[in-house]
Image (cartoon, rainbow, N blue to C red; front, side):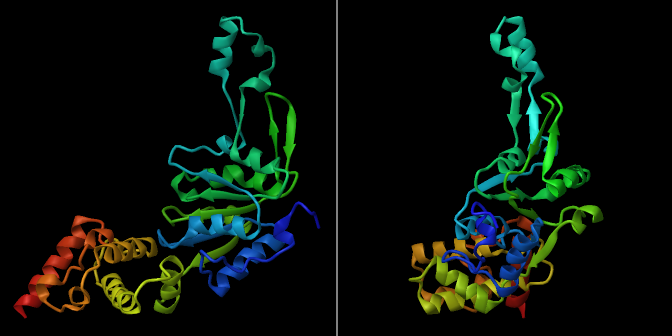
Length: 288
């Protein structure tokens, strides 16, 4: 066991800022023990990205973040060779063109592989990239090494990073990639877990406010036909606004059909289709 590998010397049990369920703790520790990437799926806003940040804190190590876009290519995580800059410098007679290493830009995997202490490497929203992206990383993540063709060197991981990969299920991931991962789906928190999350973020919140707001929040999520259900992060934003505005409890408890849409609903409802849905429900309730 390496002294530079804190993931093998301690276990993840959540942090003071992150409420982790028992099955999530098991998943993190299993991935660390197996030295396999941890693939995390779940609704947007359920804390997948924050998990990587809190795991790094819990293991007292560094977090290296690679946020994936639709244009991201797998080789960018290894390195990029800037041939254009080298050509321009050669035309200007710059001496540094003699060393090709001056034009090699290290990627996030290279950074993680050469880190002195075992880091947490976050590959965030892998499903945003094209379908070949996960397959293009299979060999490097499996063997923890890659070849730099321009310099002829092979980069090997000094300490195997704990890789956490998040996905919002926008695309199916290849079976070959899935076989190499430990998988966990973050279920949407129930009311008891959500109350624990609220108390972590807002320890001074009034119990009655938290209870009423939670009731409304889950009622909103359970409305049939919603295009985008509000998430944990949106609930926390809404609560912050409610506390800031110091609204009377009567406003939250009101059953008036004209106030069916929650106050400050812009923090919870994020598109016009869902607002129109609530307006129709309010109209129907009023007529009834």
